[in-house]
Amino acid sequence: MHPTLMSSHRKPRTAAFLIVAVLVGSSFSTGWFLSARQSARAAVPEGEGHLLDKGTVPSSLSEDVKFDEFWDVWKLVKDNYYKQPVSDKALYYGAIRGMVAAAGDPYTMYFDPEASKGFKSMLSGTFSGIGAELGSKDGMVVVVAPLADSPAEKAGLAEGDIILSVDGKDSTKMSVDQVVALVRGVEGTDVKLSVVHEGADHADDITITRQIIKVDSVKWNVDKEGIATISISEFNGDTTGLFNKAVNDVLSKNAKGIIFDLRSDPGGLLTAAIDVASAWTGYQTVVMEKQQDDAQSLPGVSAPRLAEIPTVVLVDGGSASASEIVAGALQDYGLATMVGTQTFGKGSVQDFRDLPDGSSVKITIAAWYTPKGRTINETGLTPDVVVEYTKEDAHAKRDPQKEKALEILRATAAPAAR
Image (cartoon, rainbow, N blue to C red):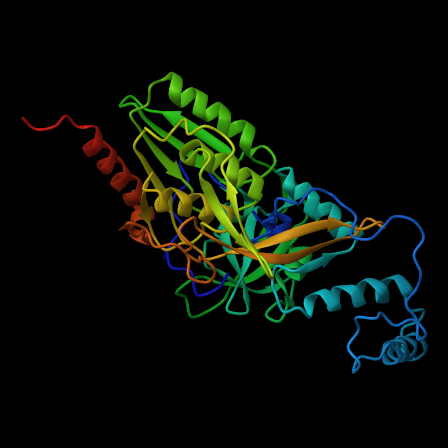
């Protein structure tokens, strides 16, 4: 996920929005985009394990790596750190966390048991936090998108904001998951963020009260013109069911066109993305997944019930991960006109695994490409029609991106000239 966010401002979410980080706490972590194999599975066999000590060396270990030094440092900390006693469990979890972070990927991370519980609650669409998606850009933790009507949005957090500190703790050298752990907290408590708004030359301090966040990931309506608007705020556990209800409603009302709003959608579950895209692509390839030594095509899973309805998909700099997969597939097949600004550019797949002690690990295992082989990582998707959303638009309560979508759909539905 990287180069700077392309859209200058977050558009109003009239129809609504929400991945990641719950930030992740309520912030999330862009890209907690899980692979199809994301179901809870143990990474190691259950049962008794054994401690890797000086006399136990894995056969695959590089010759220049000696575990003797690991244990020497462990003992030095245990014996010499001035605040005693030193917790073995704290050292243990810290060692694993550091090992995973050493991969150098912002989406490969380890969760201790408490953090793991929080991360899983996020997948259900319910969590306690501020309601903002956080991600990594150019080595900094930034706001990908705040949830609609969330404490974060009401406090003024916006797409592209850089998080400098959390409750006075410098976050400029922290990973996304570390910032998420600080941002999350008990309902009703306050968290103070120091942020630099996009385009500003100074930092602002913002205090936000955490609350329980529960948002339906899909909202929809059909207007008097017969134009349907389907908005997906994130791809989580409730998305497929709600989206199917939306499709049934759109079809029963004989909608003449669809505005498919993926703005400020930070992503989520791959399985949900494929379910949604299938409504247009049918059983064709939705996404290409390239792993270490091979690649595979992931096809759609249902009939293309919406393929014959003219569609405009709206995207912006907060559209990431799973939302880019869906938008990319529709664009590749010519099933929708993409309107808005450059998307975020998060094109990697994470595999999530539970560990026996209640902790978990999320590891980047693959990169994904659109059906035509386009990479999205770090570059994002370029809309067919670029339409900016400015501060002036926000103040005037205009949505030029949606207005362009309506213009396109009205032209499509207009009778041919005689």
